[in-house]
Length: 142
Image (cartoon, rainbow, N blue to C red; front, side):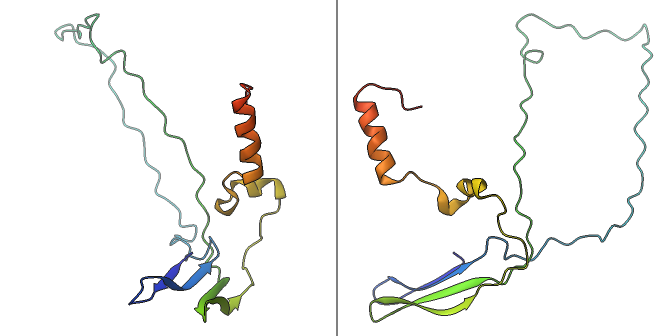
């Protein structure tokens, strides 16, 4: 969903626009400009005898801290796709008033990956009833 319009008096949605999930313009690209190489900082590893070594106590939390890695999420590559559909509520019925069905990118090539799309999220009612039945019988549902 991209844009919706509500009626001023009732507050109900009367117009809705649906777009492709790749409809935004792509991020600005530097068109393959060569980056300036950066040299690593040189660290002097020699110790002076005058310097005191850090004393670490057993109850010091600084040594026990674990660094957590953030999960890298795949970002959707935006292509500026023009595919969209606009529907409007006319006389109590939803009617398509504008439709562009051509995408400028390949669609999902593997049908097995459609379960990750937002529109395919959720559990069907029949499957949910079956899972509830298994749960009530003290059977594992995993």
